[in-house]
Length: 268
Image (cartoon, rainbow, N blue to C red; front, side, top):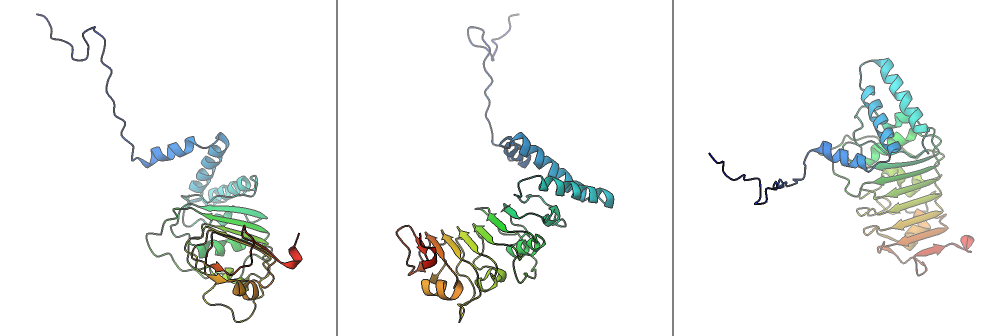
């Protein structure tokens, strides 16, 4: 008995190619795999090592915890003093455990959770030798699912800190230790892309502060509202250089055509 035509073949007997449709995966593990493909071999190895140490720190064995922390310290100190916060760092492990000997530190915060701006500056106190600090929040920095625990904000920054660079600052107000009157050692302050930031404090000071900032850069701050007299005479009385860009409510500043002002002592 003759068999019927093969549905998978054409008239010439060739096999029909199987039709496939790619459906985007919603599996977060596959997304993580894609991210890992973008990392260099060296970065991927570092990421895997740190995640392994983080896992071991959570073990109940104190000796294993200690060994994992020491390995993390050595790994970080071998880098160029630049650190990125791990997205999945366990709550009970503070990232400052990685060591506080750095003079220059760059931190990227990609996820919110309970790690608030206040908590960042609480933890940064342990970096006693820190001279330069850059903190960048992710552009899509998410709000925590629940109200974060309130923490007591320290009264001042690390004593040796000379330069602070804040990018994509997520809040409408600066924490109290960053108000100009508390910046008695800092010489350079950069604030960029803080779309919610409205001012340097809850009220304008009645007399000049003791702020030591000499170089101030304010960029992409659409809601920051301050007049030149307040900025120069009250908030930053020692100011020698201002770089203002795309901050329309920072008003009446005697800047040149590209937003630069230099004091008399800073003229070229």
